[in-house]
Length: 236
Image 1: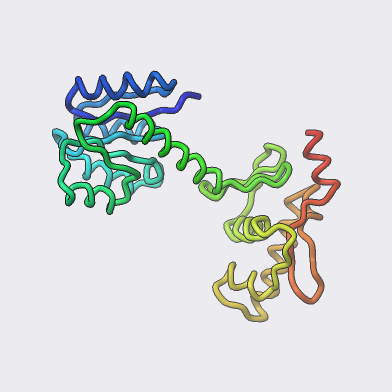
Image 2: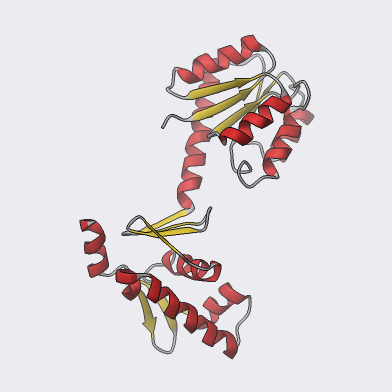
């Protein structure tokens, strides 16, 4: 699927220039010419990236950006401000809010394409870090969804947190005290029993991957992708 980029720019000539150069890279663009319409499009489409002018009719670019950051569905979408407001204070305002980049008009189309490409690369790398893959077992930390061989796993939040913690530290024994602090914030004998219960339930849900959660007696637990589970996922 092509990369989707929303351009919110009230000057149609500038918007057309931006769209033309981005679409030459194989990216799909959506042009919007006012603040409210831009925010509506962003919320409806959840694009891969947004290019925002600051001075817009109805709602300025900073207002759009703040609204994006308030919603889970849009807060991680990368944003590049493209504006005629070149003063340092304006640039700092955009960057301090968390914008990924800031360009001023007039601009070089080649530089714009390069900056967009860099932002998309960083965004893709960041998204990949939120997904943990071990053989046929996949955890998405962004959505808290888990799957095994493509089939959804119904994990509680605590089970997901425990499994992701172990998977991210594959082949390294995690002592009970640290695991209890990670799950519950502190450790005591009551939580030690609760930890064992979570481990037992995880193993019950993981099927062929149950043996990947290993016990180090007297110490704690660790995740190890064993030969049987790895070969099974390779044949799926």
